[in-house]
Length: 438
View: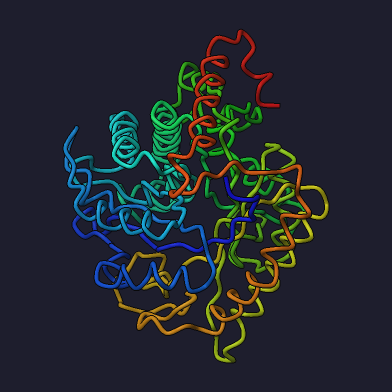
């Protein structure tokens, strides 16, 4: 097994929600040129000194129906990742589902997705790291509360329906993957939010929003929600049986809490409950500490970026600010195990949150869409070179048991999987599984 490493990462932007009443699909892999340049893109990841890559196959063209798949593109891309000994953090569902499933209101989605996750793990048994469903809270909010994507609904009941289906899909997928790869590690890439009251009358609405931001992870980790959130869930269609199903889940032991933070993650709340962007107030350090205090899990900074900007230095300055926040929260005792600039290349139309197809290139990547390195790419490469040998020495007691693709058949790795399988059986037999997740 390789020496303990801090997980410096980037990602391939693979969002694929539908818009226009489900008649048009956004495919960021297409608009960002990945289908044409994937070989180059993987080489660029290696050129930056990065060993971890958030990436997953396009679910809408891979998952053709119950038990039916087109693995051709996945075989090509994951075969190359294995050759390069790159560690994929596999993103199986990124804001969209295949047309035949419909959208996140479909109650069959969780079971179908778990089958997909299991069959992916069987086909690529050397893959260890997963984000089954990306940004569960954002996906439910944009699809069923804001009315922007997929079902394009705007009601509390639609939001709760989407949320419970999405989180159940994530939990079932984790369980299905663990049955194939007992030492799998799940990195929940989830938005980290905060809501500030700008008026005394806004205190109560802000408190409700600050409780609501935790719903996806509360359900995912089987944590009891606040009383107001319990009433909210039950008032909007979640049954007591469904709620207690989430409480009985015991997969937290296989998880790293991934926190995504952007300058848009903090909000001002007006007295009427409406919100506006506040810009950075607390920052990643303080908000991550709040999430860690709640879930007590190792943490990975799984997404951040900023436009390069007119000065050409804005993204570089943001990289160093985020990195300073990572070091600060880590030095305060929070076990931060990784950092991600998302994504490898520029993105398209995220300035409208993928609600419109304007073809606007957003200069957010480490490389532009012609695969020329941006200043932030140069800065990130240097940051990794400077810090990669320092951080492990500061965390000798915190080792993420990563098995690289090249190590999959090593005796130590086989032993790790065997011990993980035995531990899983032990947890299943334990009358007090909650004790194992403290």
